[in-house]
Image (cartoon, rainbow, N blue to C red; front, top):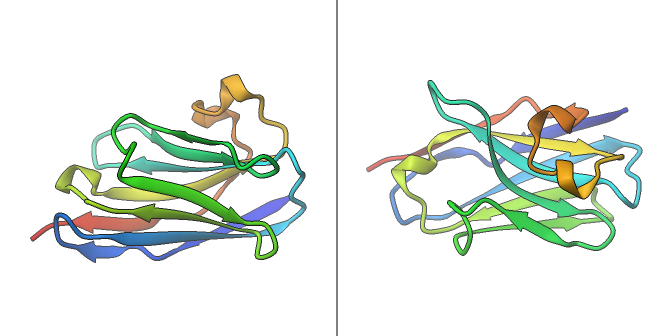
Length: 126
């Protein structure tokens, strides 16, 4: 079992930056996939980014590519989402997710993740 706790959300102006962190406890396999998802009011859950724990290969949604960077600290069992050039449409609750047995074709499928954090609010507004 893996427990995930997000931190770092808040209010930021358009064009600003914010860094989210997700700290894990429990067993993390070398083929673990850590991801960030988000959900805006009235919308479904949207894939943002993912990283393979062992290879550090990363995946991004087109909407955040070039603005967001996902990374992981293996020793701290923490995954980060550095968000820059934030836009009002980035406003959402951001969730950390993970899975020890995820195949590549399932990385962008929320129902395939076993572990979820409680979410952290990110609001982009002037």
